[in-house]
Length: 320
Image (cartoon, rainbow, N blue to C red; front, side):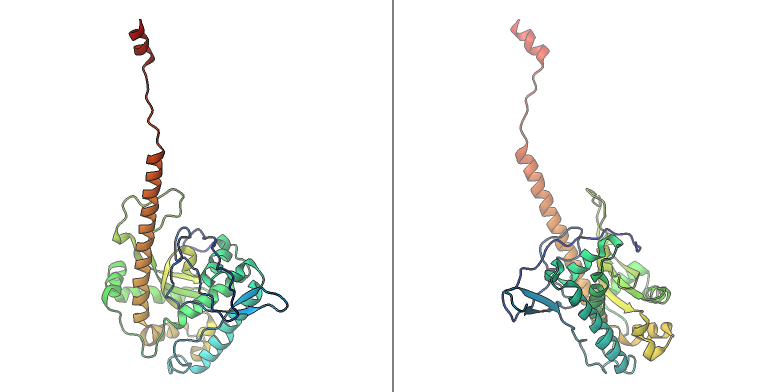
């Protein structure tokens, strides 16, 4: 099991089978939560589109994920990340994950799930099922491309910077912590900035005194394809430290690649937007939990039967 310890969420909600040959399935991911609730839109990364195709000789329709391009031309990040790196990283590695996931899910019950629900279902409490690595790597790479922009780097502003200063002490300390996580991830993996809403993974347990300070920014690292979705965190930023992400440009100098990412490539605008969405999602979930709590209390109150206890000794004395 990868730390931090978390309980994997089983995906239980599938998309309705499409009836049109030319359609795009929008994922039904219900958001980061302790239990699957009402469907919510996902804006980071943008909704994963699936192409619908009719199976030969039948009326059923199968949905396939498509390779989504980065939100900029492949040479737009030069000289910090070369076009050749993007051609191999996105054009071959990322494409391979998409092709393999489609092969593994075709004709199975996973075929109708969103990408995020496939990740949650196949994580399987750390006992990974075959589709997990491909599904998670598709999500991770979509998220990674959108974490960068031409002319990136610098320093964030607004609420993001305020929370960074609050939770890490200063922007410089945050950078060092993220840099360390990326540099010390052994072998292949990812370093993340995430928003943690301090959920307790214990049945019938709630935070007795929740406050805004309970919701914090955290830096975590994960091996291979694992990402913070399985810990019920909201990812805000990631650095890909698989060797194929930087070897053509930096060879084995991972530390130099990390520095260039933070100084020249990171899109703090994207991170700020993701933080806003994560906070809204956490607030929405809390409101939903409060609503359910009130409904349960009302049901309990309505079902109560007033009982009258009679003191038998006193009653007998009155009849004498």
